[in-house]
Each structure stands twice: as structure tokens, then as C-alpha cells.
Amino acid sequence: MNDTDRRIVESPIYQGTAEQVAYTLTTTPWGSSPSGVSVALYDADGTNVTSSHQVSGSASASGDTITSWVVGSLDAGAYYQFVWQFTVSSNVMTAWADLIAQKH
Image 1 (tube, one colour):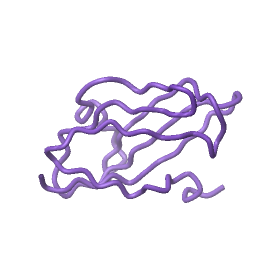
Image 2 (tube, one colour; image 1 turned 90 degrees about the horizontal axis):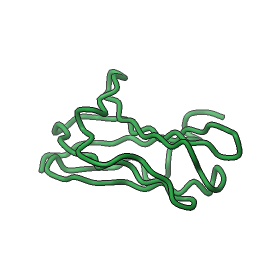
Image 3 (cartoon, one colour; image 1 turned 45 degrees about the vertical axis):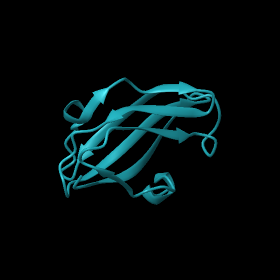
Image 4 (tube, helix red, strand yellow; image 1 turned 30 degrees about the vertical axis):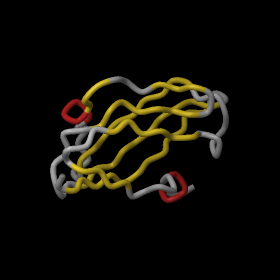
């Protein structure tokens, strides 16, 4: 499996710097009933910047849907990688998306 197999269809995601958004991921392509969910945000250098951009909440799962914490305080023109990790049928899976910040 190469990295593009794990990139979600909606990638890239564009978010304005003034926006605050909680994103959802349906895990059906990987399996049902995800558990042990986590969501992290990395900058272009690969540094985990979650704590700087997690406005509120935490990642959670309901049925086959994972909801991220609220993403905000993004830097205009910055490129991020949004990484979802979860367990399905004892398998730890990862999916990701490019997140690009746009002014306003």
C-alpha cells in the first residue's frame, strides 16, 4: 500500500484562517466501528502542531464516523497534514489529508 491509498478523497482540504471546523471521516473503506481514535496536525516540516491549532474538543467515534477536534488558528498560506489514526478489527489504521490554510 502506498501513501496515496491512505489519503482521503476530500484531500486537499482548504480552510480559512478565521474558520474553526471539526472534520469527520467515515471509516467504512477500512472497516466498521473504529476505536482508539486520534487526530493530529503536522506542519510542512513534519512537526506536530496539534496543540497550537486544537481550538476545542477531542477526537471521538460514533458508528463508522470519526469526528476531529475543532481545527483553527491556522496560518495563511501554510500547508498542514491532517492525520487520523484508529483501530478496526484489531488493526491500527492511518488516513491523512492535506490541509491548506487560506486567508480569511
